[in-house]
Each structure stands twice: as structure tokens, then as C-alpha cells.
Length: 288
Length: 100
Image 1 (cartoon, each protein chain N blue to C red):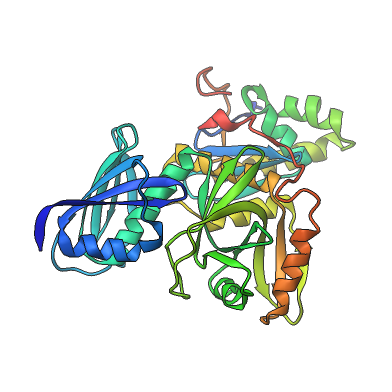
Image 2 (image 1 turned 180 degrees about the vertical axis):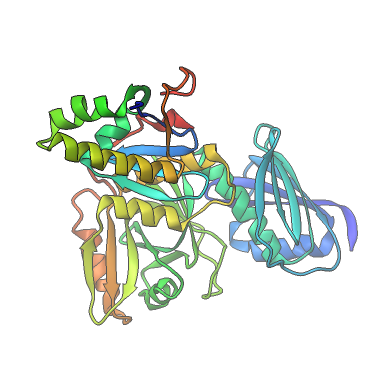
């Protein structure tokens, strides 16, 4: 059903994006979907949606590339153009909410890269006022960790963590992008205490991860969609900066509620939460 | 025998983290961590200094290694990284604008 353009502002990670559409049904869908993330802030980015009928979520690979000053983002079920200079874009997609999620995730990954941050394939939650990130391959236990979380732990996401640097540390934000838990995260944020790579095992233990392995695993789990040298370089720099600041550990865990006690003990035992002492040099950063 | 000159590809990202050089190929996301000796060669890959002089003046000066063995290892390392497109190899010095 069409009508005059209606606008909802959705603020994820402190970035308010105005989503405008003439399709009343789609407008109500996006307001429901991002209910906890609607905002009255002045939009930093404007996206105009043209909704087409038919089609479903596509299994095609997403293609993200620069087209002059624009980013062109395409998959079988959507086509988006975004100009980082004007901060405006257009999206042509069907009314499927998963297509909308994909467009926003990719857009946020590009915005975050500009800011030295990234989207990480990880669950995250706030415990003792600090964010803990849990990453790993599918089946490693991200959703399990969020399911086992005690009531005083606030879920930021069970699927895609939103991470950005701030002075001397890093901050994780809640996102509405849900995984298996099918529950959006809370719209809040916290300073990152630690990143844990998950593995299931017979008992709980937390081990160091060598720095090079930490960066490599981090890069494998960062969501970036564009095969663009400058962007890859930017994200690699961010991953190195993150690994030099935040403790990255291997959490082997037996899936019961005791694991959260060990996580709590670990982060409470950090002398300066979220601050490590490795140095990173960008001597070669101008290579690309 | 001709000289071997090496320079770093423009399609890579590299960082030194806690003394280790980490290199990532933007094109295929392959990732390498260089050991101490490889890091020295990597940093000396300016496109103008022949590989045997890098080995003699840098590697043998900084590490207690046999010169012939160091040269063999350096050639293996260069072959491996050039196979991944991370180092460029030539028997002539690289033009100024493409060498770092």
C-alpha cells in the first residue's frame, strides 16, 4: 500500500539513520522490527526505500563495490546506493525484513570502517558494567552463552557485535540483528572488557591466545563485504588496534551456567578492564 | 649470475604488532606472520637493494647464521611470498615509484 513518504529514524551504535518509504506496510514492518532502536535524534544518514513486490531473501553472494563516489551494494533481493560524502542513499528491495537487515548491516559495516570499528560475528553481553564478546565458528557456543546468561547480564546481541574505538578503549553496542535466539539485543552499550573465542569442552578454562593468532581469528570473524584494498587495510588496522588493546582469550566451556561465574571472575580480575599493553606500529599502513 | 631485487606489493596490508610483522593480502585475505629473520628481509625489501646484500648486511649482521644457509632460506621465503603476490621479484631494480 502506497502513500506519502513516512520516515522512521533507527539508531544503532549511536548512528541515527532515517529510513523513508512510501509503502505503509513496510513502514510499519520496520517500526516493529527496530522498535527498541527507534530514535528522535537528528539523522546522520538518510536512506530512501523503494519497495518492489514479490521475491524473497536471496541466497546469492552480496556484492559491495565502489562506483565513483558511491558504494553500490547488491544482492538478488536488493540494490542499494550510498554516498559517504552526502550521507544519502537509496535502496530498492522487496518488503522482506531479512533483506532490510542485510542492507543495514552492510551499511553499518562501511560506516564503522570509516570510524575504525567493525561488525564482529560474535555474541556480546554486559556483565559487571563491561561488555564481553564471544566469537567462534557456527556451533562454537555463541547462542549457548547468551542462553546461559544470568538475569543480571544484559544481552547486546547473540549474532553480530557492533564495536567501535573510543579514547583509550573500545565500546560494544547492542543491535537488533538477532541470530538463533531470535531476540534483539538491548539498546545500550558498554566498554569492552575482553573477547573470548569459544570452544566447547569437558570443563571451563580460559587461555591466552598468541597475538598473531588473535588477529588472524579476529579478521576471520569481522564482517566486511567489499573486496576493496583500502577497506581491507582499514579493517586490518582496526583489528590490530583492537588486539593490542583488548584481552583476547580462548574460553573452553562446558555448557552450563557455571561458565558465567568464570567469565565474571575473569573480567573482575582485570587490572584495567579493556586495556592491554601491546604496541602496534602502522609503519606499513600506507602500502595500499 | 643476475641479482634478485624484491619489493612489497601494493595489494597488501601490514602491521607490526608486539614486534611481529603481520601481512595480509587484500585480494584473497591470506594472512602471514613473519619470523624475525623474515621480518628483516621484509623491511629491507625496497626494490633497489639486491637480496644477497640484504642477507649479508642485514640478516647475517643481526643473527648468528651461516651466510650460505641464510641465503638459501631467504630465497625460499621470497619465493613463498612472491607466490602469494605479497613480494614482487625482479632481476632489475624496481622503478622508484613502485618501490618502497
